[in-house]
Length: 148
Image (cartoon, rainbow, N blue to C red; front, side):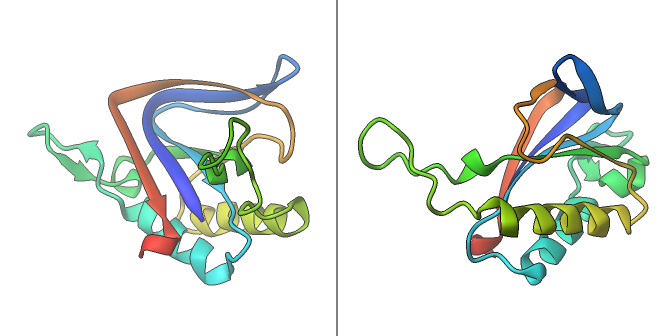
């Protein structure tokens, strides 16, 4: 699994002008599922994200986690995180899991993250979504379970 994590002061996702998910302070998580991903990958990633210390403490140091600040997460599926641009001009997506595999793992990832006590908002799997966010910092981190 691959996640692009952005520290945000607010974020929302819309489909056809309808707000599906919205958060205030917390994390915007773009989540890609690889063809080889298993439940162990999503559990590792959810645990890592819940405890990742990327929020500032009273001294201005990144020392607090999403759990520490009582923040929320907006999780949006994004197969394009597995784009292969090595050949030609059109990206290939053969490393991205198909919807039959990706959607259940995406939903389970959201459930595992929520089991830590983190409020979760989502978009709509497979939909063409508009994502709006205010990146705080900016802080953007990429985690790939293949690199653990």
